[in-house]
Length: 219
Image (cartoon, rainbow, N blue to C red; front, side):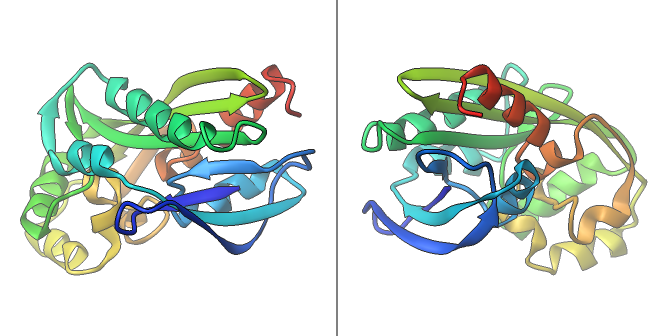
C-alpha cells in the first residue's frame, strides 16, 4: 500500500508500517491515503508494505478548500479519486493502485475539508440535527485495467448545542476530514444513525473495494 501527502510538489515514497492487507504478487498502492484508511484496509486480510507517497495535490486543495459548492452528488469524489489513482499508476504500471476521495453531501451542497475554524463551525451547524450523505469515490488501476465507482452512506446527526460544536472544533479532529468531522473519533457521539457502510464514512468502503479487486482478478 502507498499513501500520499504533499511535500513541495515532489514525488517520493517512504515506508510507514505494516498493515494487514491482501497477499498479492505486486504491491497495493493507496494514493493520498489518510492515516485512518490503512486501518480500514486491514479488514481485507494478510500483510503487505504500507508506504507514504508524497505528491503535489494542488487539485485536491482546490477541491477541498472550496468548502461549500453545488455539484452532482458523488461526481467530485469520483473525479478526484481517478486523478489521484492515475497520477501514481503512470509511474507504477505493474502495481495495483487505489485512489480514494470523500465528500459530504447535504441536499446537493458538497462539503470537503474545512478551510479554517469558521468553516468547520459552519459545516457542523449545517449537519447538526439532520441527515446527510457521505460519498467516497474509488478508482483502482490494475494490470492495465481501471475500475472506478462511488459508495454512499447516509449519516444522521443529533441536534447539537453551540457549546458542543465549539468544543469539537477546538480539537484537531475536524480539519483533515470532509464535512469537518471524524465518525471514528470525537464526532462519534454526535451520530444518531448510519445507513450503509460505516467504513465508507471513514473514507475506505472495504466491502466494495474487496469486490472490485475480485472483479479485476487481483484477489
